[in-house]
Amino acid sequence: MDRDTTIKYLNDFIKPQYEIRWFIESLGNDTLCFVSLKSDEWEMLEEEFGKAKLNRYFTPIDFESKMFDLNIDEVYSLLELRSKNENLDFSILADWIKILTKEKELKVQKNNDKIDLKNYLY
Image (cartoon, rainbow, N blue to C red; front, side):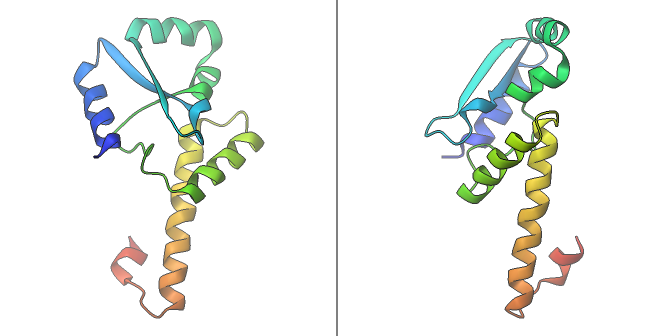
């Protein structure tokens, strides 16, 4: 049921020998793709292509990663931001979308006079 959690914990379990990364080109498709390699193989790819380029296509997964749990608006926003910001790390774009989504939710709460101050100030 909770695919994000499964991948996050599996990735944590196989580290440091292996690492699962999300193939970002699959974002927006009906199937997300992941690649598992030995950690030293990821390091070799990083040396050959550079960290920024590698992370643009194969983003590391951590406990804050949101993959399957992205809603359609977040997916489209990420795709648009990614196309306009080729040099930014995907994790930065994902954090940006997270902030924008939270801001949108708070505006709706405010407009409906149902603002949760604890969430608003958090």
